Amino acid sequence: MSIKTPFHATSCAGFSRTESIITPADMKIRYLFGVDLTDQDGNELPEATLQHQLNAAVSYLEHKLDIIIQATSFTEKHDYNANDYSHFSFLQLKHKPVCAVEEFRAKFPTNKELVSYPPEWFVVEQESGQLQLSPVEGTFSGLIITQGGSYVPLVFGARSQWPHLFEVKYIAGFDADKVPVIINEMIGLQAAIRTFEILGDIVLGPGTANESVSLDGASTSKGLTASAMYSAFSARIESYRKQLDEYITTVRDFYRGIPITII
Image (cartoon, rainbow, N blue to C red; front, side, top):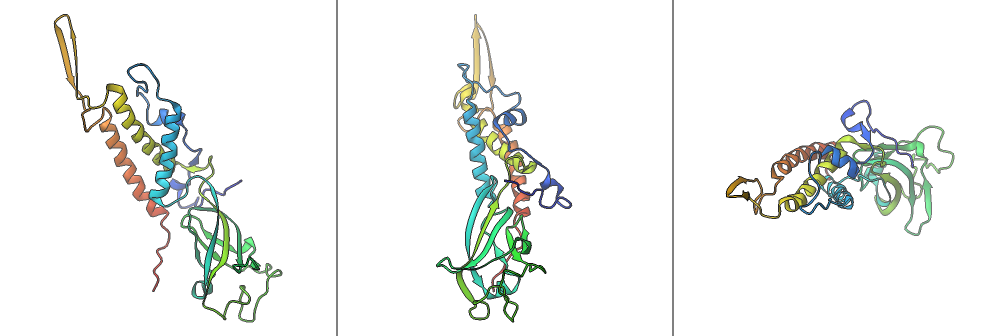
């Protein structure tokens, strides 16, 4: 599968710079560097734990940002609305960003196909998941065009609405080797936060606020940032959370699309 990215290479450089999706090895270098990943008995944090945190971070961000990160194929039904149809068959797809529209058809619920639109007509606002049809000269040979210019025969002009008339098959998300750097950064930060929460308990033990050492009558003690409420990595967790919140605001605005108001 080949997905065309970046979407807006000339105007959105920050979002169009891509790389392979982050791995546990990347996570250790970028976010956990210098951190002892073993418990008091010398057992190392399993790589499967890091991979789970990355997977969970992807799912969390997909829900938080209302986007698809890992490339996924969807087939959707959309209602026919005469007003939207007169504006180049405007459709708001349910998932974004859209990488490629594979099929766009008009068909009755009985699966009787009215028309399959040629790919040359597809106009896609990929980040916001908005699709329109723009008829191109030379691509009309397989369609029935009415006197009113309709390219949805037997429906346009007769009814103002028709449920589930349109069927769209498309791919949303990013190829595993073409994930925007800023998305990878968010995945890594979220996964690191959860990992530090685990490490905070296994490094010194849960709820440890002070550490004392005594030898031959001499003793030393030190206060730690860890407590019943705060772990050994609280400062780093807080720093990562602030960065993540800033990224979420920026990325959500980027993929929001054109606001639509129904009157």
